[in-house]
Amino acid sequence: NSEKGLLMTRECKSNLDQCSSEFKAQLSSEKEDFSAALTRYMQEIDKVKEYGWCTQKELAERAGEIEALNRKLNEARELVKTFVMRETLFGQEPGEYGELDDLQQELTPHVDLWSTCQLFRAKHNQWLTGPFNEIDARDLETTVQ
Image (cartoon, rainbow, N blue to C red):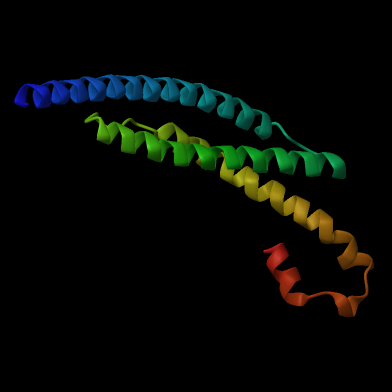
């Protein structure tokens, strides 16, 4: 009976070791994919930095692209949290993910600029041609700040 218990314990330990190896390999693969994604995000940010004067249609498209990129960076931040948790679980030193912070810092002014431009453009006609008494002063103040 004790031999059976010892055999089951060894089998469980073997299964745990195998699962641990698989999870570590998966983590490593995900971190490589993450690194490649950061490179793509940097290229997208470099493209955003080149944006200049544009039509109203292009403004909406660009603002949408920038907002989508910002969402990707936010999702990447959540992914980093899972990396750190798993690294800690496996007894590994948590990785350095400062590059993500740098990318978000670089993108933030562009997110603010293009979303403000889009909002201004959307409300511009209403402010200039709409009935004056229908303009919400607080909304206007918030929009232009």
